[in-house]
Length: 166
Image (cartoon, rainbow, N blue to C red; front, side, top):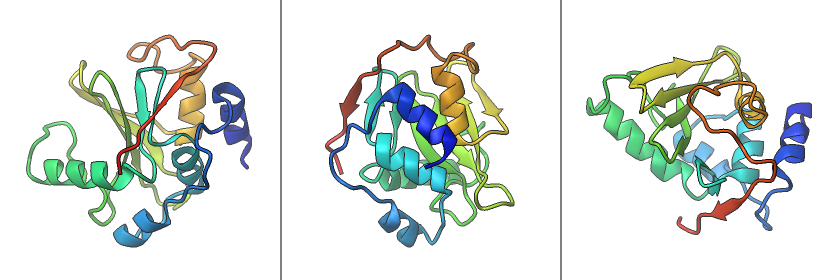
């Protein structure tokens, strides 16, 4: 377990899921290797709405949401999201959304391990890129250290609403 993920568990608490979860089918179907931190976050906290605001995709929702967004972008549905989205080869990973319609992506970098967070911010109508990965980004967000201009103030104790759709 990475130090960042251990800190994330301290903030969010243990995974709300009781069973072992995997992204192996998604990776196999898309012929992609996702960074280890994506596995940790998606399998531990994915398929859940956190604090009625942030939905992280996991083994149950990642593929369906990614295919939808990939087709939407490829079909010219967005002026701001112009890079390909997985399952398109070399595409970004759509890994979550907010209840305000912001879309959260991970942009692949030269190092297969270091994908960085980017977002289409719906209310701002813009594309926002960072130079940090998903674990570090979530830590900064939940601590109120980054993205405070477009994300809410977070409670001290976090609640999860689990998705039961496949």
